[in-house]
Image (cartoon, rainbow, N blue to C red):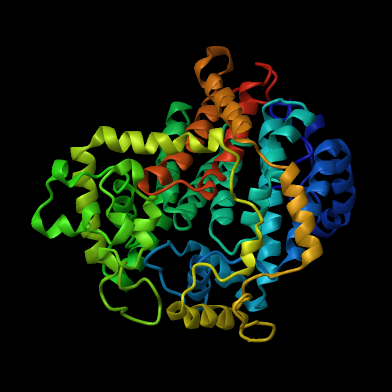
Length: 513
């Protein structure tokens, strides 16, 4: 969570002594804590518009926690994260930074508490959006408006209720930018902290990897000096390299996962034509025509989404016998990953325009349609779990909770999946019919941020960093695999901040950047 100093906002930096706020260094610690309620009350009065919106935003989160108990579990991914939190080891499909977060929370043995902490993080992200926008001179109502998508979008609230990595990655990324940009010029401590948080976000969502390089580049463009840029880069690389070393020690390959090649191969199924690619004999089994059933469709226009190629157990990568209790280990091996990556690179090199067209077609999706990440009734059902994976799912939840108490076992409410409370579910369904972020509004937000990059009087290095980061976070998952609104959500707060900075009155920000 980020809290505001009393001097956040226009004129915060460079002010006289009368603007200084006494901190723990200037008064005894016990007096500081005794004064905290009064300070908080003054802070709420000063930022009453945002404080009111923040209080209202608690209500739909409370409804989500009451209606979907104890938390929302997503396909097999949630069980993988829970298993990794108990049997600490890097997962071959998804990076396990989120499992380490769950491991920290494990002593309480509660998925309700996990969801509660994530909702607090969601409110913290909105607070950081508000703080950054205020720091660039926008009025309280404008800064609050920039935080509204994070405060009230049902897709955002659902991600907070999920036992999934998306929310933690978003919090780390937005936190890194808040640490870097709230005070200018950034100190050595700020750039190191921002680098560490960005690197940590990569171990949660590998598509954040370019941000590790973007922050040092931003510091160089701002003339912050080679020392700060280098320190930020080193601080970002250390968590990533440490995780990759851990993965190598366990799985034998210096990588974040054994899935990047397989995900990219599935992306090429949108356009791949092996008559054009002409793969060698050992890769012909990866061609679309060699896949089972409907996956063998010759016309790319009629092919299924990439995810169907990745997860269909009749496809080439699943034809080995399962190698253990943990699912997916047979498909997501280093050998399969390397083989898939070879095919994917050949396909993209042979058909670069087809690849670009497939990616561009899906990039427009979040701007022309309303997101489909909503609280649906099917969360009560055991989607994504087959009979072979049910013992693993049961063991994941049982071991994390250290108990089987309250774990239902019937077909509708499989172990650990949400128990829906009808009156709260109905209330949430009504809420999400009327409150959501339309795709067209999100398109306007991105265009306003882009205009801020192109118009000299409104251009800032900070807005450029935020807008480019938002674009990367949206484009990379689509370029690597497939579109889903979960991958768009981390870009929303960054895009909102960039757009708000573009709309500021030049010269009124706390410190021009």
